Image (tube, rainbow, N blue to C red; front, side):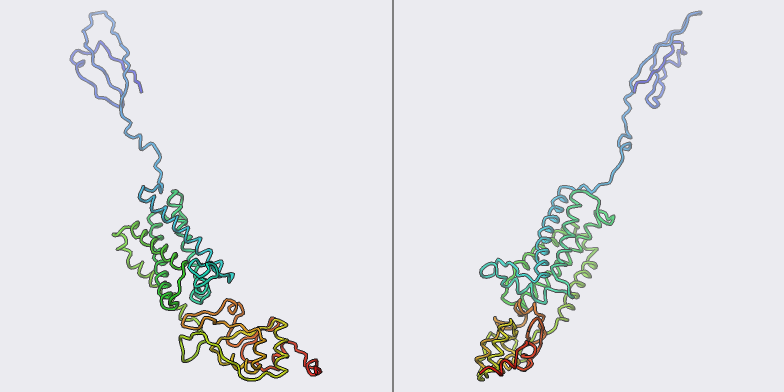
Amino acid sequence: MATLAFASVTSPPFSSSRRSPSTHGRFQIPFLHKTPKWGQRSLLLPITCSSTEPNQNADDSEPKTASLAPSSSSDLTYKLYAGLGGVGFLETTYLTYLKLTNSNAFCPTAGGGGGGGSCGDILSSDYAVVFGVPLPLFGMVAYGLVATLGVQLLTAKKLPFGIDESNARLVLLGTTTSMAAASACFLYILSTKFSGASCSYCLLSALLSFTLFFIALKDFGLEKVQKEVGLLFCIASLVVVTLNRSYSALPPVPSSPSEIDLPYFSTEITTPSSPFAIALAKHLSAIGAKMYGAFWCSHCVEQKQMFGSEAAKLLNYVECFPGGFRKGTIMQKECFGVGIEGFPTWVINGQVLSGEKELMELAQESGFDLKEFNQTP
């Protein structure tokens, strides 16, 4: 900014050689003064000076804004959170849908590629439920949280609940710790309860969980992690204890009292069939009645013996364990949908009857016309 200064030629000769200190961009320029003669007017010469004072407060004049703009390393980390979390969210959403709808899972590692195979067996088992809530649903929430925080940190948007970037990283570390602990527990269950089974979805979820956990460890920093070891240990312990409590409360799977690993076998029905038993078996088959049983169930064998060898072959019998029974084996999907509480179980005209039944009781429940049968020659 230009300022206008005036220098007087009538200044005292001794004061003209003294320079005035600069103040806020204005200063006086000394000139060589001559003592004016008597009656001579003094001249005031306008001097234009340019101020080159640096704007030291330029940065202060600009508003300071706090942002979450990540550095290049953080940028990559947040992309990994968003990407891997998104993949896990899609996978667990698909598995949650299958679990809630009792649908078969497409299993790439199963024979034929689409019949469910081991993936469907594991997803349909009681180990895929925690206190009545599908386990994939917990994974969907966890992966969704990781992906959401990753996207918001990446785009420098305002984080939910007013948390800052440091606390967001702590939330990510805690969430991924719980995910890794749950994956470790489920991998142990797969190796002990489902020996020989393979589940591509379980392995993918475990890989994503452990990868996100190690990314969170690296991002949070070793020194900070050491301060939070107690918190992380409590989170992992809580997950393990919760899963163990849920699985320990599972009802025992019906099994032979003396065998825990039974290959499938068939039992020959030796009793002859009466005309009444044959007519009843045909009637039950005609109305769509079904008998659900297990090859190792003695009551199922006795029920078939009541009908006799010929009539038993006419029944709509559903074997719930066609592949044998061992610890961790689950029933067929068709049996799960019935809500079986014991074997044998009859479903007649939409009504579920549990336990072994007399032929006359089955005739009454199914609407079998005894008079018409008695009149048959």
